[in-house]
Image 1 (cartoon, rainbow, N blue to C red):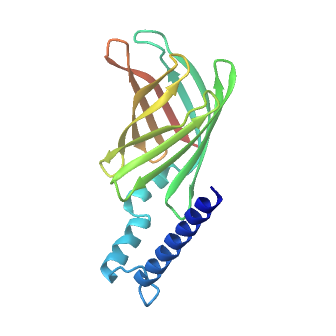
Image 2 (spheres, rainbow, N blue to C red; image 1 turned 180 degrees about the vertical axis):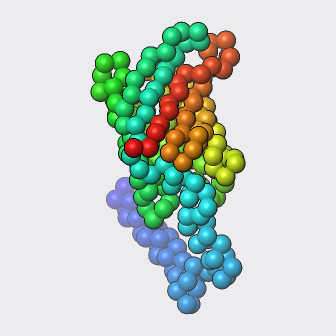
Image 3 (tube, helix red, strand yellow; image 1 turned 120 degrees about the vertical axis):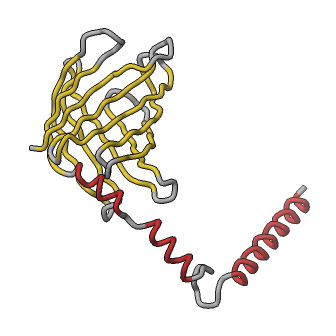
Amino acid sequence: MQLRTRLATAALALALAATGTLRAQDKPADGGMGMSPEQEKAMMERMSPGEMHKHLARLAGDWTFTNAMWMAPGTPPMESSGTMHAEVILGGRYVQSVWKGNFMGMPFEGHGTDGYDNVTKQYVNTWVDNMGTGIMYATGTCEDGGKKCTTTGAMSDAMSNTVVTSKSVLTWVDDNTFKNEMYAKDPSGNEFKTMEIVAKRK
């Protein structure tokens, strides 16, 4: 058994050494990544913020918001209000926001990250808050120069104990006002508005 183990160990060591030698031989002599100048330029462009990221940067600043939430179609909304602070991070690539307020008599705090993926050509968003333990991830597109953005994503729903799909439509009313409407489907599969947020810059 010991001899078999030693032989296996030696074989593994030889395989790793051979792999390392092959990788060293494949490495370009100039120390580069083996890419043409055109490929390197395209890669750098995909890694850098662009016009789409400038659209997102409009969210940066301090805001107040009102919120109306519907638990089911035809029910009266639950209303609340709060504040939001957003800032551009990582060299203009993302906008990070912190939302604070009260919901159903309890302190509420949510954190969002918005970006644009140059590879997938989609706007991306993540969301976490103190009303759950899941992370929501959404993707979508914008139109009219970034004035209207529609994203869809999935999130854990503590009430139904399932993962639900939701749609968000963010519309810029003017440079200092935006509206975010969220939609989900009822048990019959019909879409209805679950939330509407109106935010105004301080």
